[in-house]
Length: 184
Image (cartoon, rainbow, N blue to C red; front, side, top):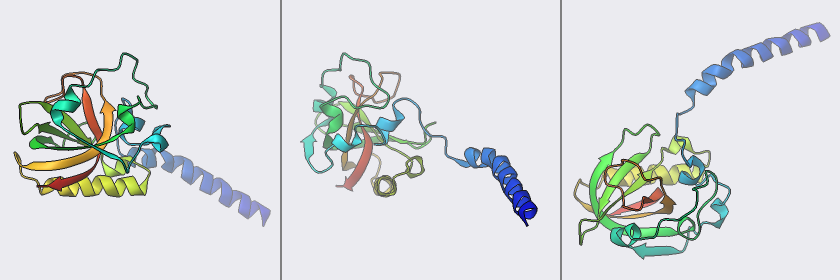
């Protein structure tokens, strides 16, 4: 009996070992740079206020001073990355084919030509079912907003590295992740 159980255990171990690469390959390829911060999976996520919303504008967020520190990969930069912001803007461009599987949205301020980026992560790129549901709800809401239509976006502040992104704020500030969208 022990021999049969031992053989079964070895067989199961071999099956798991052989299946592991396939299981890993099935996992979604998500982002890299500051990914835990972008998806609220970082060490400071418990300090982010998800109830106190700061109403603001695209122009005001683009005017924030850039932090003069290295951007940590798994920590937030206070105070702006600990806040939830609400911005009403024109949906200028939607890109759903980013390498990190985020939906990349360029917003324009309705008063001037200021622009910024907001992003909605792929719900499959988080282990938190509550966040996954919020990301999916935001994506569903965005589908109902016409291009050049106005909507209100609620999301967590995020300092992105300044690189050649179309529509980015001059300081690289974003809302990432977006947690809610309301069509106007």
